[in-house]
Length: 173
Image (cartoon, rainbow, N blue to C red; front, side):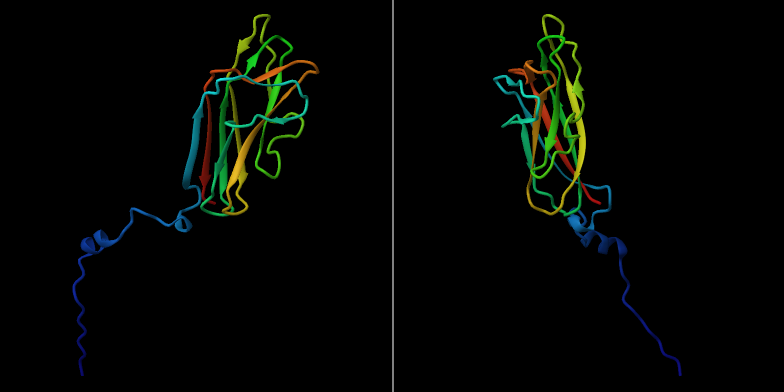
């Protein structure tokens, strides 16, 4: 006895056009995919200075928050700052705090702003690139800290009317 099986013809192109592939759920994104980007460009109108040799919070607007879509994702931190060096001995350093710990070395942070201010002072451009791991999907606020490298010397972590930029990029793991 012969059995015949028939099935309806499927138009593959038609079925593919029915799929909603414009939105991939965050949980389905492959490792290395950019999940979200949060950034801020700002120009404070006043100096942000310190004479402290320990790190102090630069305050608002030198912070930025992100609410990770995935726990355990990588957060890439890119910061562009514009310090002012008032003289050859006016060095300083920056650090980033994630609400729990400092991300850079506790004493030197992410490197020293070079002491090349000269007798008339000098504007500098300073970049920080760091990363963190999101422990959960709770909001994380990254704060920038500054310190003076020399006792009695004021470090201008930001000079008035200089534009700064912070970008947080969440990467799926």
